[in-house]
Length: 544
Image (cartoon, rainbow, N blue to C red; front, side):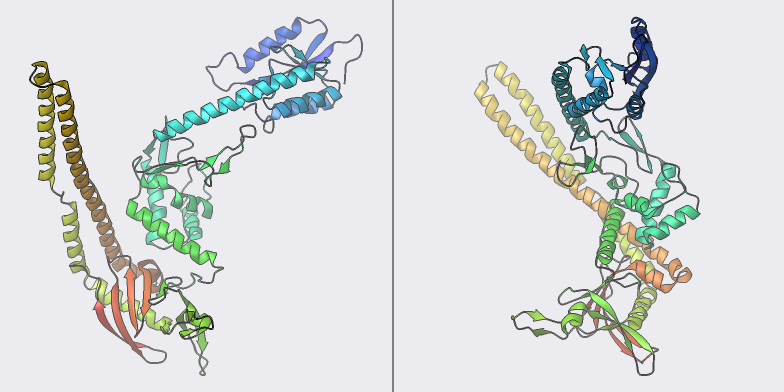
């Protein structure tokens, strides 16, 4: 709405101001002084207000609260004219520029772009505005591309972008361990992987213990715990570009599902957890997601849910309950193929279906696991640990270090020979062509020697990793003694049993997380309700 004849025009200014303390030119006070002086020079104008959005990109108007407040004031008839320095400060999006200037013009409100010398109330303003705004938008696109290119190069060099996760501090693109927070991270991984606790339980325990999140909240959620368990930074790796911005105008981020190349750097920074624990956690997350993804078909209600497999076809065993004539019930685990098709046979299409592997009684299975933990693992604990220590000692002893020293001396001797070649050429003993040929031969020899050194170093690194993994077995065996005394058997079984493979003739292959290889047994059970079991060890899983 225009002002009445004889009265001053109500003029406001719009600007985007910098939040950088060192940017004095674009500060709010600097721009306020500029517009006040500019309006004072015109006797027909009076300043209504200055609308300023701080540190926000001009390529979208969605989050520009002051811009939207100005539009609302114009709609209410409080403004006759808007001043802004240039189109790029008003809106770099061409469509936004045209849309809002048209909307303002329909209200009788003009916009003057001072540096571009455009007044939207002029007849040719929209054409000039379209050209100028398009140029500004193209410049914005180019800037966006340059910024993305620069960021990618920095990411490839290992510079970290974004916020630091719990357990780390981030300064100048470098991650460093925050030891106080790192203990919380280790606790979460231990509770999930070693103690077998669920996300909800872990979140609840953290809340009850008064432990705060990275942002200082006392409320933990399943999602927060899950993000920590899936964050590769805790094993020392760095994955960047998990999200990307497809449109430089909207700035909306999307999850990167292959649209752009991710940047992954292994062993980038100091880890908080071991790679063995990380890999075990990812396997456990995968196992639980499979159970959850099958519509609770393999519910984790029981300690062995989703852990029993058929030794013949690899199918999962599922739980089935049978009621006896006496009114009592018993639970058994049966191959899914048997449940679907019955005993093994050939169908009408010539496919072999069904399974004749037999079932495993739930109570009998619990008796077997309890027996093996008490009488095999705990009773032989000292011997198992001694054997593990021997293996650790072998792996921790560097391999062929004398050989490495010898190889390095060979490289040193070859480099001396290369240096003498130059002297020989200068003295006229050999030609430049001979020097080039000899250098090629020496370089090839050095390359072969370096390959041998690298192979030895890799063997030593892998051996050290293996030694660290073996140490985790010792920790689990020692923890097992206390767990068996202080926790319910089902909780212990859920945590220590990784997999059970059922073979014919009542043979079981049982994988424990505290043994290097499985225990293989043949069992016999007698009795109806109070089962008596006989266990024959075929392989006790004990390495010597």
